[in-house]
Image (tube, rainbow, N blue to C red):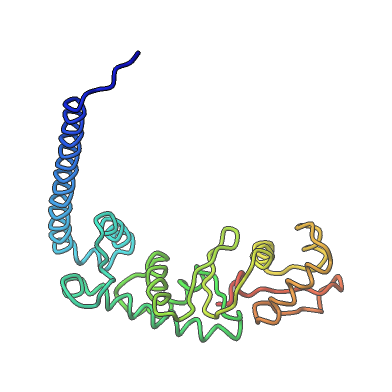
Length: 243
C-alpha cells in the first residue's frame, strides 16, 4: 500500500510550490521590465529617426507608409492627436486632417454619379488632381489612413472589398454578400444583366431582381435600356472610371 506523506512532507511541497511560483513571477517581471526598456529605447530611436528623415516622411508616400509600420510595431500612433511631439515635428496630423476634408469633398461631389460608393483608385486619382499644386504626393495608404480617421468620427465612411477592388462608401448603405457579388461581377465591363447574374452566380430570377433593385434604389446602379441586344443593363459607376 502507498503511504500518505506526513505533515512535514506536505509543508515542504507547499513551500517548494511557493518558491517556484515566486521565481516564475520574478522571471515574468524581469521580462516585462526588459521589454518596456527595449520599447522605450526603440521609441527614442524612432523619434531620432523621424527628426533625421522628416522631409522624406512628409514628401515620399512609400517612405511615409514604412514609417507608419515602424510606429505600429511599438504602439505609437502619430495620428492619434494633432498635438504634441509628432504633430510639431512632422505635421502628420495636419496632413491627414486636410486629406480627410478633401476626401469628403470628392465623395460628396461624385455622389450623384456613383450613389456614394467610389473605387479607391478612382478616389486617389481625383484626390491627386485636386492636390496637384501641393508638394506632398499622396498614396492609397495615405487615403486609407485618412478614411480610418473619418470613420472614428462616426461620419459613415468605410472601405469595403468587392473582389479585387476596394470601394469607399460615404453613405450608411448596408451592403450584404449578394450586393458585393454583383459589384464584383460588374467589374469586368462596368455593368451586368439579370440573365448574366442568374447564369454566373447560379441565382434564381427573384434573387437577382431583388438584389439589383436594392442597388438601384440606393443610387449605386443606373439602368440602360438602349443596349444593342435589347436587354436591360445595370451600370455601376463605382467600378468604372468617372473621371
